[in-house]
Amino acid sequence: MTEITTLSQFLTTANTQFQIYDLGRRVQHIDMLAFQQIDSLLAPYPYPIQGHAQFAIVFWQQEQLPYIWFVKLPLDEQGLLSPAPRTQFIKMILEALGRNPTQALTDAQQEQLANHPFSFKPNQHKLALFNALVRLQLGQPASSQYEFATQYLSGQAAQDTWPQLGLQGLADICVRAHQFNHLDDIINALDNAPIEVQAALCQCLEHINIDKRLAEHLFNQLEQAQDHIKVMYLAALASDVQYSMTAINQLNEQQHLDDNTLITIAARNWLALKDDATRKHYLEALAKQPQHFFNQVFADIVAIPSLRSGLLADLRHPDRSVQLATAIGGLFRATSL
Image (cartoon, rainbow, N blue to C red; front, side, top):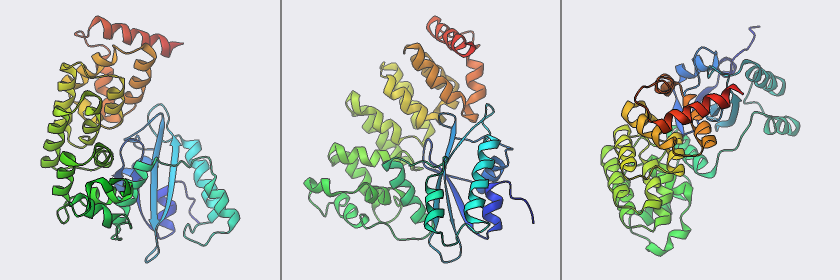
């Protein structure tokens, strides 16, 4: 019998269909071929966070309801899954389930799988968006909260009934933005709904590939917003690299790249940092923060494979400011200890 050495191999051998979603930075689907490369230790994990890969495995057989595992595995210095923990996780699954992950489990097996050291629980915003995406992609109906969310955003319910809204219902609408009149309703809500509703919508939109009309509207909202809430519109622009770049550069000119905004960019809008000029502005703003903050954020973003080469080149860039050069020196001293 063939030895099982990867998660993909295990799920394929068990005749399951499966999908993988990153839950570390943004909730996003990972292409199957890409995951097989990651799983085989041939490619770095594309969205690392704090030295780990955090992802969901959704798998099912034929007409069964899907099973979901939330998995957190450490990465090595090259950004690859660390071999020993990955192998330990696979071994643990095989010991608990044999070669059939969809078999009925005993209470002991359920407890063993629920309490394994590689599990994690996503926060409620990511979980709501993840549930909405999975239901949509598997052709399942939206949650029970969807109906009222639709009524509220379309103006069929009084505006002061917003406390009855469920985050799951708003997530269901956001992933279905191109169905019915949902896109118009979202845009209208960003203009007229209470700030609590706007904030919840933005938290959902952070994880969705939004169209240009919605991106333009979010950017306009950001320009007009009070300083302390600009960041929520920025995060909602995460999937639109051009508008993210424009927003970051504008916030930089206005001296609004504070610690919270810098963290948000690293966690959600990092794709904008592929642009050399935007990345330079970001690093200069980061260098104005305390040294330990600079070190932590830099270590986080330099681990992202798509940013790594650009950031390493920036460490030696001759046009960096004295302040940035000093922060980089502090980074080198900290890493050499």
